[in-house]
Amino acid sequence: MEFKLKNMSKIKFIKTEPDYKEALDLIRVLLSHDPDPNSDEGEQLSLLSTLVQDYEARSLPESLPSPIDAIKFRMEQADLKPADLIPYIGSRGRVSEILSGKRPLTLEMVRALEAGLGIPAKVLIRKPEMESNSEYQGWDNRLVTEMETRGYFGNKSLKKFSKLDLLKDFFSSIGAQPQMAVMLRKSSYRSSPLTDKRALIAWSNRVIQKAKKIKTTKKYKDGVIDLNFMQEFVKLSSKENGVILAQKHLKEIGIILVVEPHFSKTYLDGAAILVNKENPVIGLTLRYDRLDNFWFTLMHELSHISLHYNQDVSLFYDELESTVIDLDEKEKEADSLAEESLLPKAKWEVSPARLIPSSMAANSLAKELGVHVAIIAGQIRHKGNKYVYLNKIINEAKVRNYFPDVKWTK
Image (tube, rainbow, N blue to C red; front, top):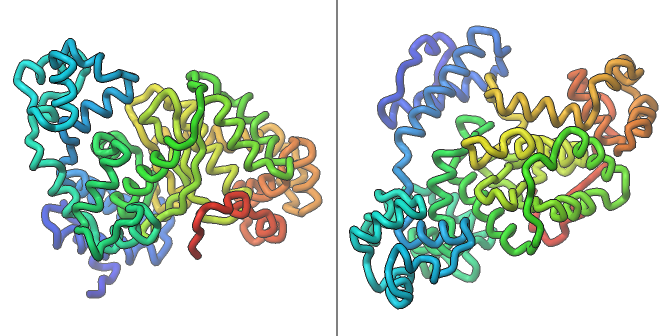
């Protein structure tokens, strides 16, 4: 079905699945025109995106964890042992029976766990057979197939197991069912309305799974990351193995950096995952095999940790070249801090590179700041909207080769 621009006047509140599909078609038409944000088409695109996001928020089934998963997740968060549950559940044997699923929670236990550990009663009173089945059934078969191809299910496959069984096993194996609920409700999406949000959830949990295998005794302290830290940190880029040094240095302050390629239905560059405040996780996809993109994305996610650590958002998904027109304040703040850390405004305004985007000017400014020239080349192109310049510098500085264990797809 084709939509001409004259049909754009028929924008309406999305109530049904056909309305939703029609809105997506209208968005595709508008995106193909790459409209100016301030034009009529740009405003229509912004409105449609808002309506689509609202419908998705209303139509996604409530994804609550099972009672046992919720208790185990809270134990992990608070570093509790089974013995610590005795005041809420009873004897040591009863705690063991509850955690193994052999005994159901009583009303008294539910009240005690809600009051003592802050686990919502509506989660604790759920019956085991209601365990997120409706949520898993809604997952696209192609997404699950891609997860299988990428090894998310280990040795299990769709030939021998159902989609439902594979998804339940994947999320429960890393204690992620409570996190699914968090990700749906406490996430900031800087992404196209066409992005598959379930693919983002699968990707995030894979990143968390990888992060748990990286051992660190250091706990992150709020306030460690600020502009001064970031400006010094980015100087690691000038070293031959700066990417690996950056990953190591972050681990030393309690932040885990994980690389996991994006899914086919997403255009994700990175994410800041604050589910575990003691060890925040930064996930990067390296969607572009470029050093400048690696450092900007990394600094953007560090900016979220610096600026938004104690706010009511647990996960920031960032498609940095998305079609989102009106960025929310948090994304603007993160962009601003990241850019200032890479190329301070005061240096940029007096640099010859601002007027002459040459390799000589880029090298001179990079040497002055102590950073890799590809970072400066990327900033010159971005700040001046001059993406035809400095291609040689940009394209020669690769980054995926530093992560040989990652299975890359073209």
